[in-house]
Length: 116
Image 1 (cartoon, rainbow, N blue to C red):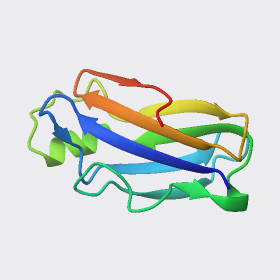
Image 2 (cartoon, one colour; image 1 turned 120 degrees about the vertical axis):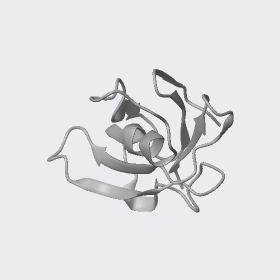
Image 3 (cartoon, rainbow, N blue to C red; image 1 turned 180 degrees about the vertical axis):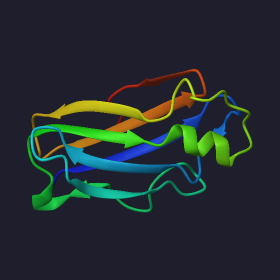
Image 4 (tube, rainbow, N blue to C red; image 1 turned 90 degrees about the vertical axis):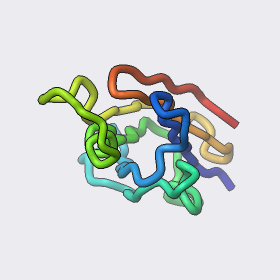
């Protein structure tokens, strides 16, 4: 059974990004959130973001509320923040596989990749 997981690291502090809010939606449908939550103290979710029959082939968007996270952590951001919401749009070709979408983020840049 396939699943989607994520992990967020705050590269400015060198720490996991605990408490960052996120939302998941299918990009090719109404945009209604499929799931939402906050990362734990390790920058991860306590379980998969999506799994089972809800996890199917298609295009998804993970939206990370990075601006709120940095503001809440005391980072002095200009307004509007350079990065407020980080949207990662990715495709799932094989819903029976594990897709891990990590985010490495600072107030001024981010990167992602398909992890394991």
